[in-house]
Length: 117
Image 1 (cartoon, rainbow, N blue to C red):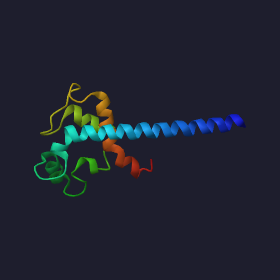
Image 2 (image 1 turned 45 degrees about the horizontal axis):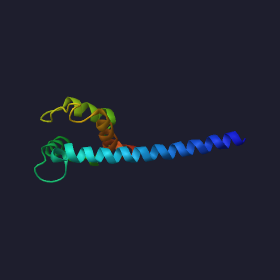
Image 3 (image 1 turned 90 degrees about the vertical axis):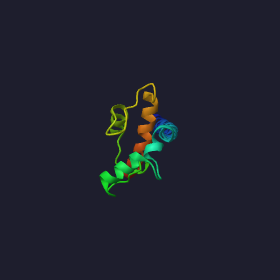
Image 4 (image 1 turned 180 degrees about the vertical axis):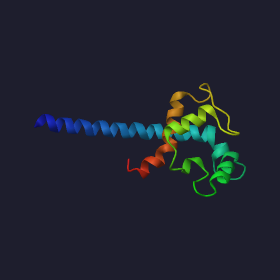
């Protein structure tokens, strides 16, 4: 029985460490977003990405990317690497794979909250 309780305790510690890593990754993703994405996808006047998404979704979804609840990591990674419309693709020399993972975690954090994760 002691082994079972030890395993349960270890799982709890690992879960807390994963949450801390996730929080760190999300914070790094926020920094990547502010550096690379905010100028086009942030709040305010003169943000072409936000204006394009506002026209496309007509209020059905938030036009500001970091307010969205439907972005998945795979979708974020696809658009960052391939580009879309007037958005250019970003090379690995601009946004590394690790930074892209963090950005994808940041932009999908609201979807995780909706799903109870």
